[in-house]
Image (cartoon, rainbow, N blue to C red; front, top):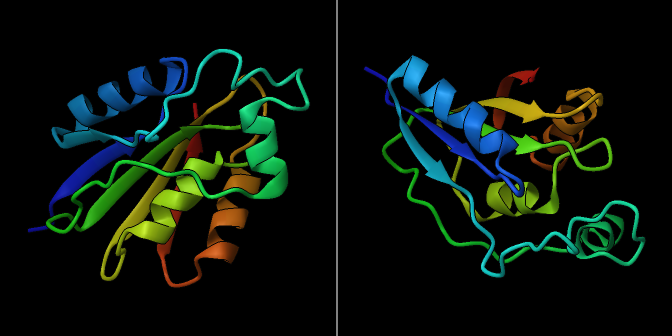
Length: 138
């Protein structure tokens, strides 16, 4: 029997609420994807070209994150807010630093209006070895 987990990154709490609801509905474990250096409101100010999140996205910076143990899971839900039409850099770091061999990934994202399609395409292109089967925006 496959074991499922919901993982998520949430800077403002919106994605956390969706992740908690999803984990409850699916009766799964849940783990938060956390940066080593937490984001402040100034860090995620999309109107400031020099905010941390803008620089990370523009320069494709690796974001140091606390490691998660996903070894025992077969199905992994990965949730995040859409930042500038794609996944935040911490999600790329999550994919880069964890072993997704023999795992099935389901993406979910929160956004006020942007589609999840570009994020799915960007992650699939960056990590072709990861089996991403679907993506849903909330």
